[in-house]
Amino acid sequence: MVIQSLVVDVTLRGLGIGRLLMEQIEQSARAKNCDRVALSSQTSRTDAREFYKRLGYEVSSTSHVFLKRLV
View 1: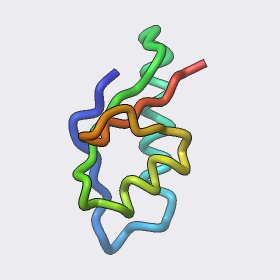
View 2: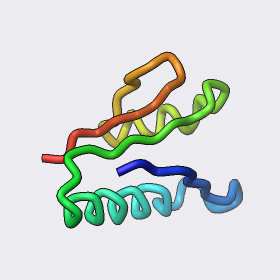
View 3: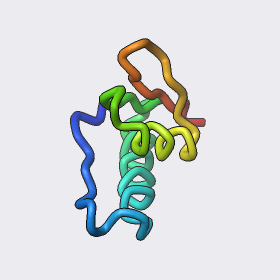
View 4: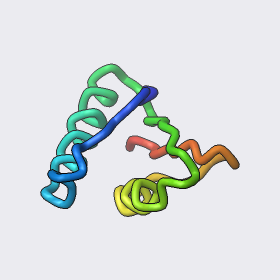
């Protein structure tokens, strides 16, 4: 499954909304028999990169496309 765009309003960050959205996305991917989720993030978005890494995503290319294998 590919995530095209995911943005949480800056005033609402840190409340767990992004984590809940990602959990729902991963559940949906599993239900559709996807074995991984892919997304990209601008290299300047270090906060977003760290967020995805905390969720278990790994950088898979120099354009910072994150993948998480769904087991």
